[in-house]
Length: 232
Image (cartoon, rainbow, N blue to C red; front, side):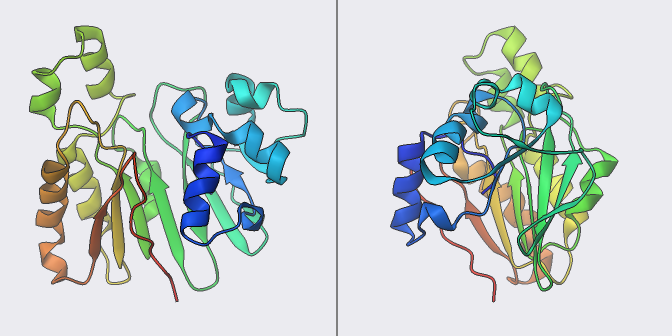
């Protein structure tokens, strides 16, 4: 599991809705310390014995991890490690956090990549190449952000190099990651105030036209479960 930003009870409810026992989870991989990414980590660790993995800067900065009475498994950013049969690469990203990362999770047969909460495209995103499944941030439409309800300092934060990816930036990233192995794309971290789902979808759909329908495109929702991608 990558991040646990909902309450543990909500996470467990959603896992059970897709027939997954929380005790089957091998690890929670933390991307950064912001509360919408770590809120449920401590309860999942204590109630279900799920190991938590983070780098040292994130462990120190995340409130649920600082008070956790069981050890956090530490890794070095950009140094791959293994959990069970999974080969995990935490790569650095640009966001206003202590030491934020995205992840790829790989087995002998498949590779999944996830990155959200990044303000700009950096060379480290090369790690996302040749994934079967991608989860990419498509946070805001720049016009809706600039003309929306956020105060000026928040608009600058969101659109800055340590903020979040716009739909157009997500499309640029996606274009660089297209390859024959890619089968499923989820758009994530879609703002409810500064974006519209159909705008995010249309931008990605335009990029995916050259794949002739080989890639399934889904939106990641905050309030309910997205479709499940099965790798066989």
